[in-house]
Amino acid sequence: MADVARLAGVSPMTVSHVVNGHRYVRDETKARVLAAMAELDYQPNLAARALRRGRVGAIGLAVGHIHYAYNANLARTVTAQAAALGYHVAIEATGGDRNGEAATWQRSPLFYDGLLINANQLERLPDGVRADFPVVFLGESMSDPAVDHVAMANVEGTRLATQHLLDSGCRRIAMAGGSLTTAKRMVTLRTQGYVDALTRAGLPIDPALVVGASDAPPLRTGAVAIATMVAAGTSFDGVVCTTDSVAYGVLRGLAEAGLNCPRDVRVVGFDNLPDSCYTVPSLTSIDPHDEDLVAAALGMLVERMKGFTGPGRSIVGACSVVERESTR
Image (cartoon, rainbow, N blue to C red; front, side, top):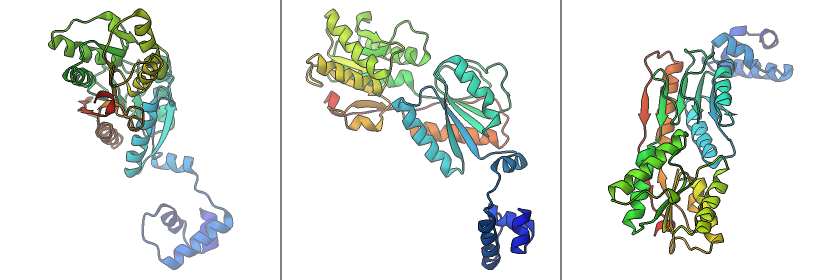
């Protein structure tokens, strides 16, 4: 910066104002500074700038698997909203296990001003992390009251999905990707909504209709769920799915089994992903209002980055049914 100042015949402070846009600089002076920067091939040292300011202008977004459709859509929403707030976003893949999630959290203060973490396994603040580092948790497993937490309406969402199928006349409703015994918090909550709706309707809970929760990718989980029920001779006329990606696999499984959706079996997903408009048939889905959830999470994170030190806050979003061809 001093070299640029000497070549342009101005003070280093003037160069700083031009580079950072902090104050008005006359057009003639600004032109001299920019010309000197070009001649010297001057590039601001971002690492040094971060050390001087005590911030880097970047937020971390940690997700389990970056190739999952929901995580890609989440990343799109976060990056767009963060950019409007003046922040860059770096995406980290944790692998969806507790060790990966904890490791990402531990190293984040080296690279980011704050972290949004969409975790599957972490329940408490991990050992070895800075308690004062700004973090907002996206997901269902976190129970630490010191951590800001934004969650979907998981129980209410699958209750609405199941009720939607009941209202359309279905009585043998399966749940693909669900489980009556799993320790995975998201699956447990979404299965609970399904169970609640059937119980309120006076219908029994048939374990043979709750299938597919596994470590397999979501598309395969859905397809295998249908194949399993068909092979076992289990009758069903509706399917609630834990995610839209599972529902895509269900639609494929129904086609392979010679079953028509929605004539033979009606299907509801969860996430309202953009691709759900383009499946055949288009997929009815639960909209978890991701835009609002991300806005709330970023709002809390920015407050933490600006010095808020209050107790952890918890928000559970709203949800609604978006009806398409798969249940009409």
